[in-house]
Amino acid sequence: MRYLTMIWKALSGIYKDRISSKPDTFHEIRRQRLMQIGCVTALGLLAALTVAKSSTFTIIVTGLASLVVSFTLSYKHKLLAASLVLLGAMSSMLFALAITGAGIYDLAVLGFSGIIIFAAILGGVAVFLAVLAWIIALCLLMAWLTLSGHIVPNTPRLTWSHVVFLNIILMVIGLSVYILVQDIKRLLSSLKHEHKKVQQSRTRIQHLAHHDALTNLPNRRCGEKRFAQLLANCANTNKNLAILFIDLDNFKPVNDALGHESGDLLLQQLTHRITSNLSKEQYLIRFGGDEFLVLTQFEHKEELETLAKSLILHCASTFLIRKTRVRVSASIGIVQAPEHGINFKSLCRKADIAMYHAKTGGKNTFRHYDLALDAESEAKFTIMQRLKTAIAEDEFEVYYQPVIHLETGKLEVVEALLRWPQQDGSLISPEYFIPLAETAGIINDIGLWVMNEACLFCAKMRAEGFEHLRVAVNLSTLQFQDGKLPSIVEFALAQSDLPANALELEITESVLMDDVANIQHQLDALASLGVNIAIDDFGTGYSNLSYLHKFNAQTLKIDRSLVTQLGPTNENLPLVTAIISMAKSLHLNTVAEGIEHESTAAKLINLGCTRGQGFLWSKPLPPDTLSQQLKSHY
Image (cartoon, rainbow, N blue to C red; front, side):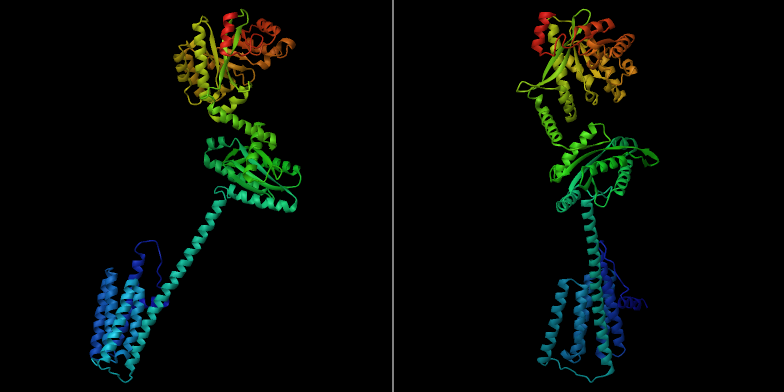
């Protein structure tokens, strides 16, 4: 019954095999086919036994025994041996039936075609060719035996037994052909399915290559292609094309506070919000990170400004991220094609420059690109590149400006001021290149060099007789970030043999607002060395009194913007008076910057200001010039 079920499955096409990636799958399929063919052939031979007589009966029984052996080998997964037994036994059985019958004319010869099909199904190329050669050899042997008279063909008269034999042969051959065709169909179906999967994968890869995985927006590569298409369309419609470069303000704090997954959710919500409000002719593109592009065609510049304001409004709206309300803003740079060029990468760079100016202009706004911005950007880039080699090529100089005790007129401190002379005799202002050095990440190297130079100069002057001279050095906020400032100062003092109380470090109020714990730890370490701390530009920043006490400052420097007009006009007098009074109550020294008139100095003396500096006494001087001035006047 089991054999009949297997035959029925094979004939009906239900017995299907799945092609998988397992190494033994093909082996298992061959095993199943071998057992199927063996069982069907065995049933055919059993049917033939019912009408077989004498030697034919014996030959068929021998063939059945061989099938049992083949089936057993197949069951034990010895497929090659099983296939050779089946193919060899069946071909030999057919040969025996033919030579005991009608020879080359016998019905058994028809069975050789089935054996050849079996070989194609069950074996590889070698087995197939071997069986084919074997059957041809048997046929040639049969013909030779007949022609040479060794056997005499016995042509029987037609009986129903012959019809049964014929039908059995045709059924077995038909089944083998059916199995072969079904396998081919299944193979083709599998190939078609795999081809479809490959096409789907290729489509998916193409999509991923041109779209952002997080937002599903066109990416930069796709944006460049779309830009080219829109630019060509604009040429035909007499319209202009614009790129709006969007950069989110304050996006990093969202990632830092809520995690990058929350930041991703915000970008997805923002994408949906913006795309929902763009027209069909406007395209949003993910440029990278928290940066986006909007491509739009326009006729009038006012259209761009309206769109930019709308985008800023959408970006500044509240986002609900995991039950937390989050607000960001956006700065936008606008560039136009073909007015500002037609190269996509160049236009994106120009739009980025305009966006940067929108950020420096207060954020949450937009700026149009113009050539002046590009020239300024190129100039800054050139300066940043030159800064990286300026120390090694000894291009910097340290100038010193005297700080005078207002009542005695005695020079007590010199402030070290960095200068960058140029070959044409001009100077690049530190107000211009210091921020660029901070951006370029080389401010620590410059600060270290200035610290060493200032300490060496002060130590030299003290050795030449000015034993009470002190030097003040300005610090950048970035010099505190790596936590190494105390060790750098200690090394500079040791290298120059300068007492710690002869060094004054000037920091701005903004330093005190950044990473308070880290700053306090380092200032405490500096105080333990004996170094003095001065708060520079006081009155222009936060003016937080608790910080002055907390960080052990000894000196307040009143910003020049409050001092310059004090003499001629009394402008800012109440504010300067309040600062000096507050400093006295906290037992702090005061230094007024930017004193240019005697009247200003007189008022400051009356207010109780301790020291002053400015062009009234001296502008910043090179070391040699200051040394001569010290020896002549002080």
